[in-house]
Each structure stands twice: as structure tokens, then as C-alpha cells.
Amino acid sequence: MSVPHIPCLRFGEAYRSFNESEVNDYRDGSPKATLSQVNAGIIRRDLVQIGKAREALARFSTRELVDISAQAGDLFLNEDLPLGEGSMQSAQDYLETLSSTSGLPHVMVKRNMDKIHYALTHVELILNGLTRGINFDILDQGHGEQAGAPVCFYPTTDALGLVMPSNSPAVNSLWLPSIALKIPIVMKPGREEPWTPFRLIQAFIAAGCPKEAFGFYPTDHEGAADILRLCDRALIFGDKSTTDLYAGDPGVQVHGPGFSKILIGDDEIENWPDYIDVMASSISDNGGRSCVNASAVIVPKYSKEIADALGKRLGPLKPLPVDDPNAVLSGFANPKMGEWIDAALDADFAGSGASDATEPYRDGSRLVKAEGGTYLRPTIAHCESMEHPLSNREFLCPYASVVEVPQEEMLRAIGPTLVVTAITQDEGFKKQLLRASNVERLNIGPLSTMKISWDQPHEGNMFEFLYKRRSIGVAA
Image (tube, rainbow, N blue to C red; front, side):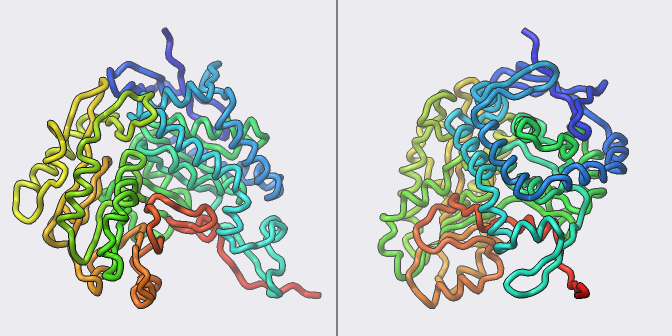
């Protein structure tokens, strides 16, 4: 049986390269598609002409592009869409194929599909949050009056560069508003996850968006570096070693480990059993693969008891068939990644100061071969202090530490954190949390760290990244 070929898209036009790679099933290595691989020279050549992509989007109003986005969301979720040369892909085919190459069970793929659909069908809500209610006419004209004051905005780039990951389809939600903001995309897809961005692009085009707005360039490290270097604004996803390279570049928005955390205040710690559900779901939802998964629980006391309760809840979890609606663990597209994480955890547990609270409740090894793939079962580390290397780590699996820290030291101890869920009613502690500069998103009360609000940016404001405000005077 022949497998489909996914081409490069140059201004929306399919381009087949002489160089190809395979996207393989994580279980048996069988090819699910071949993928055109282009060199950096093609990307550089196309970026010289990127103005025509901007012009194509500029012919549409923001309102029209918002409506196109909503239609694209429905097409993405439900309809057959082109997949490469002469092939069509149904929504069910997409779900099953993505599951087979990413290791995500069907229920998690469907959940990610629903998130993307929601984002596309609520672009108006998202833009309202990002722009703080700026009228669409002002975005179209570039200037106008808002709340009685003159405003003017200009784009910071002709294209948004994207170097995408393979671990979670829903991260594609982050670039979706750029189309309504009339900024074309230039993308390197994740090696094991071309499916979601390619399907999204086809959904946009089918909904009436100009195809010139989309560059889809499977490429190597040099090509990825050129996307980041030549696009004045770009997003990169990766581990800390990758994202640290761009941490000081204002033109690159870095999306790496989130080190998201749950904090329980002095006033609520006696009620900790009431919050095990929110802790467990924050740690394990989406297979523990999201930057908004909780990777640490910080408490003023009862850390051993909480770690044991989480170990008892999560330790018995095992891989289930990919189509089982109760599946909570994901396989590894690259088995060596699972093996490396398992070895890293064993090495850190071998020293003093930390213990594996899931081990007593896990019948067998953490690393398992099951359902045809490689899996890691959940791990809860009880750490004696924040000085232990496991206290502030993040892995692509359900993992979290539980650490005892006095309330007055928590905000200093946790370091930079993407999401904090703070379970407290202490007004003084709330004020400290609201003033904290090391927390990107704050949930007050027993809310999962996975709960985000689309009308509030939790990883940088896309509008403020793609546009700047200037002063303006217009003669009467």
C-alpha cells in the first residue's frame, strides 16, 4: 500500500523536493508518509518575496479573516481535506495517523482537535483579549481612535517564523491569530508532526484564505535557523538547551519548559486531601506533555503525605490501547527519549534527598514496552528541598516533585514559572502572588494548571509581538 507524500508549500503551492524523509509509526516503524525536505536556500529565496504574501492578506478585512478562521475551524474538525499529492484525509484518518506517529492515544488527539477548533472559532474573542478591545477598523486602517485617544499600529514583521515541536498538536493554536492579524507564516513543522499544521493550512485555504499566506518548509537545522534569523518575529519550541540560545533575542518568542506549579498556602494545607484530584489532573492530563502540566507541588507541610497520595493515585496507571477512552499515557515517537528520561530519573533517585513515591504502587518498571510502543509510567518525586535536582524538572511524561517550602519563601524558591495554581484564601499571600514577576499565568483557587483562558495570553501577547504602537497626528 502506497503512503501519501506531503510536499513543501511555497506561498501555498505544493513543491516536491528531491530529498525526502519518512514519518513513521511509533510502534513498528512503518512509514505513514514521506515528507519533502527543502534546504535553507529555498527558504531564503522565498523570504525575499514575502511581500506578496502580506499583500494577499491585506486585501481582506480583519472581520473577513476572523470569519474565514471560524470556517477553517469547522473544516479542520470535521471535513476531508487535501493531504499531499492527490490524497484526501478525513478527520478520523487525521486522528488515527497522528496517534500512530506521536504516541498520543485517540482520546488525547481528539481533545487537542477540540482545543484547536475552539481557538479558530473564537478568534474574535482571542483578538479582543490580545488587543484589549481595539476596533477591527483600526486594525484595518492602521490608525483611529480608541477610548477617546488617537492610536496607530504598525507591523513588526512581514512574516511570522515558526519552528514547531512534535509533542502536542494544540501548540499550533498559538500561531492561529497571526492570519487574522494579516501576518503570513513561514513554518518548519515538527519532524513527527506535520499532520496538524498541514491540515490547518488546507482548512484555511479551503475556507477562502489566500494560499500565499502559508509557507510550510520541512527542513534541517540550517533552514530552521534561517527562519528564526530572517523573520523579524518568530516562535521556537524546544527544550531548555534549545530555547536558551534565543532567550535574549526580542524577535524570538521562546516556548520551552513551563515548570508550572501548584502552591498550597498555610490557610488551606490542612485541607490538602480535597485537592488531590486537581493535583493529579494537572500532572497527568495530555500525557504530561504540556508546558502547562504541573511539574511541582509546593507545600508548607505534609509533603510526604501528599507525595504518597499522588503516588497511590498515579502509580498504578498503565498504557492502554490507543483507542481506549480511558488512556492517559502516551507512547514515545522516539523510544530513546523514554529511555533517557528513565535513566535520568534513576540516576537522580540514586543520590540522597529524594524518593520515588510512585514506586510502591507501580507493579513493575517505570519504562515499559506495551501496546507496541515505549511508555513511561508516572513518577512522583518527594524532594527534601528545592536544592535537589528533581525538585524543578520537567519531562515529557506525567512527572512532578512534591517539596516542602515555607509560604513566605515559595515565590522566591520556585523561580520562573509559566503557570501557578495557588490554593489559598489568604489576602496577603494573594497580593504577593499578584505582584510576582516570575509567574506568567496565575490561577487563584483549586484550578488545574491546564486551564487557560483564550482571551488572556499565557505565553506572550501575539498582537504586541506582531505590532507596535506609534504616536500619530493627523491634520484636520
